[in-house]
Length: 324
Image (cartoon, rainbow, N blue to C red; front, side, top):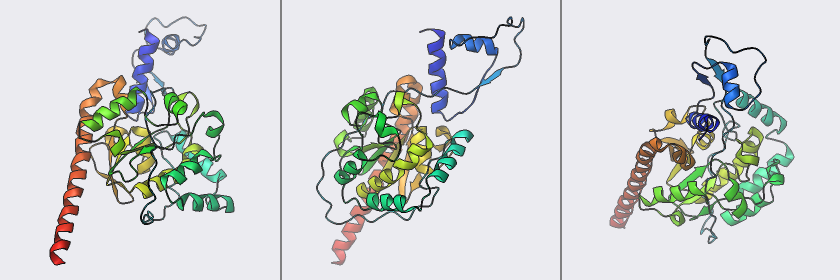
């Protein structure tokens, strides 16, 4: 592996931790530019290295997440809607100040109370099943991603899953197949789930974005804004006991937070009353095996929450039977 690849992988790992800036100690600007293959300045290198240079990490090019959508039977009764969202609930936050400023611009350009937006929100919010929602996703043109993606990737799995896994966006394999988490990262996710006695088919897997961003670049604010109603309705329809947020971007979007993933891990958060556990994206584990142990701790935490919820339900059912 050459110096450029090593630098790229290192920067990807730092970005996954939620860092938006990085100081490369002991390297001049020209030396960094040379490593990444950019043209350097004409001046001669310094004899002695001066102050460290700040450098913003490039867009991540991580392996894609995996996901599957299975047909489901119509719900016996309409699921209770989540509480009304505020404007900040409907948009994502990112550790980058520029990104958050761009998100505000996107929101200003797409007001939340225009007739067309209100009609779209009502249509999505009234989708009676995940299958109907997938149809709406396939026909969505609210952002430009539909024009570059090959297939929509709405998500898949058990429509009554107790655990819902949410990643960032489809990658190349997902785009080809129209399913989430079907590459190496998906295979690793299946092993992680198997370790807590869950199968891919028993959970529901989806992404914040429903179409692949070109070249696996980071999602843009207007794309997140356009996809938020779909994710919200998926959570309403599945009604999981626990949500597992995979990676920095998914966690910050769901929690409307700018905190790094290391700061968000280890705490039970809430998404409209549903417990959320944050952990590393499986793609990040493929790049850094040191994150497998903390990920295992996070997943065990999610399993304990599931077990506690089941025990509480059994106790309630037992008390109801006794009273009857």
